[in-house]
Length: 88
Image (tube, rainbow, N blue to C red; front, top):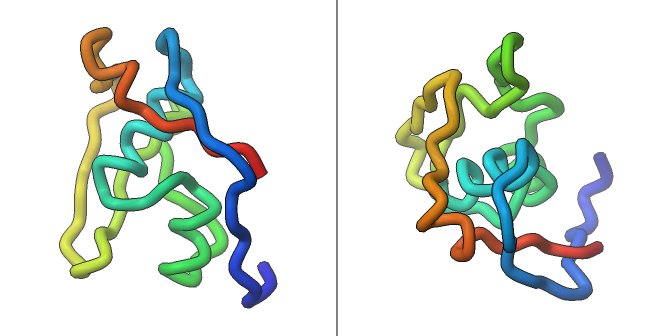
């Protein structure tokens, strides 16, 4: 990936849960907008995911501590509206 910062053009909030919203929730819990920003900041090519569900398994925060996630859904319905979806 190029060194240039990729910035979103717009943002909106999720209305209903989906696999993509689940993964965005996990990135945002760890302090990142989404997978693109995570890869930029941490200089990694791949994010560790659960093979069964495709959900993010482990993320490293900016302070280098790790967040570990379950195979099952973690973003409850009451949290869905807090998830931000960025458009590039």
